[in-house]
Length: 189
Ligand code: 5GP
Ligand code: MG
View 1 (spheres, rainbow, N blue to C red):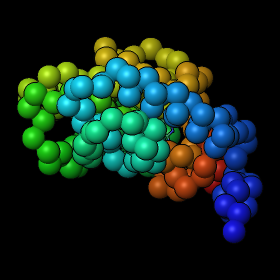
View 2 (spheres, rainbow, N blue to C red; view 1 turned 90 degrees about the horizontal axis):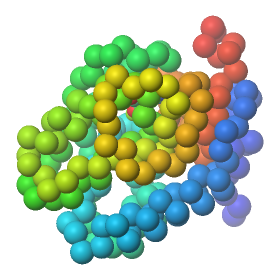
View 3 (cartoon, rainbow, N blue to C red; view 1 turned 180 degrees about the horizontal axis):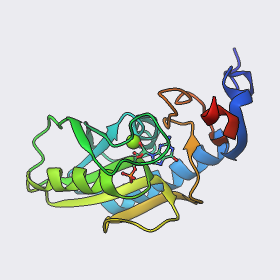
View 4 (cartoon, helix red, strand yellow; view 1 turned 90 degrees about the vertical axis):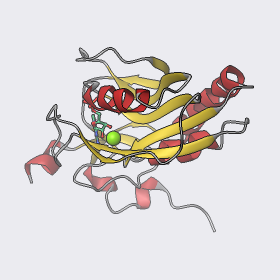
């Protein structure tokens, strides 16, 4: 059986423009995986992703990393179903692993204002890990409210609202394999 292509997805007609295809993403994730593999060899790596948007990226990135590592999940939300940030971040789920002395790599779908990552990093620091760095698939080109230790970036993107590959609009579009911009009429509907 051939895999389902995005063009068969019932949500595909809502897309105005594809920024990155599944092949673009996969090739970049492999590059990031190789870098992380060589940078973290011999260290006690724990990858921590932020629910829900980061989990597709985490799943692919983990399998592109060839050294032993653990992962955990943290729940944080700042968006209230819209397309602009509220600035208020709520932690909905804490990590379960003991992170003391570990080398933490926070794996996030997108870095926008930095509010979410800032709160998450402050929370993780309480456990006194050996190091904390960040890997973002997408980095929005806009002024940042906080200084973020961004070590790895998948793609730098313009300040537009994107969906797909884990990223949602009102909880949908996460299952698209590409990353795309929605048609304006989708928001006004
Ligand atoms: P920040 O706190 O950095 O402003 O925003 C980070 C979070 O906002 C991301 O984890 C993501 O959930 C959401 N977000 C920011 N920009 C976008 C976007 O363009 N599309 C989607 N779907 N979510 C976004
Ligand atoms: Mg998110």
